[in-house]
Image 1 (cartoon, helix red, strand yellow):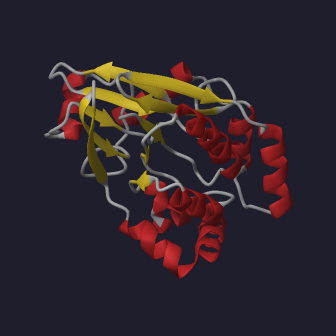
Image 2 (image 1 turned 90 degrees about the vertical axis):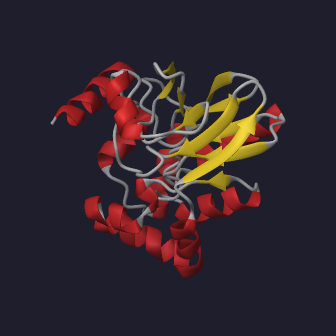
Length: 237
């Protein structure tokens, strides 16, 4: 069994379409999504596309409409209007975790941040003891997470392997593209190239209320080292 792990699409339809085209060529058995899927320029289209390919989706903090409204009421209204009541109800019912197994990796637990919360921040350099306290008891061999938009693969002192497949829609890798991973029999990271300039132009054509900084991050993604240091500084406050 091989599984495509994707995360943090943030309503970026062209990025998701490009990644799914690559995934189809991989011949995987399943697709799992580690949260923050629909909030963004094309929320309904991203929702419908994930449904059409049978993706298994966990809920991220940006999939909770109140979280979106908190930092952008315009984007929150945009999402609510386009998703509609039925899709919103489905998104609200997405679970916090998914469990399955993959030959070569063992038991997998998928969540957006931790098994009990979609908001804590941690990175590839968060000290083991602090991360283990954040995660709590995890009955799995591999934890697949999202939230920080950067690819990494680390093993904790307990033996738990923590894998972030990166972000499809808003990566912090210092390079343009859409980032994801294939699970089984090991972890293989992927980068999919797509036309980001055309994507930004399309956002403007449809009038999506996307923050200028987010557009800048798409065109010139922040470097992973600097972003990691920034997220660690947030944890320290």
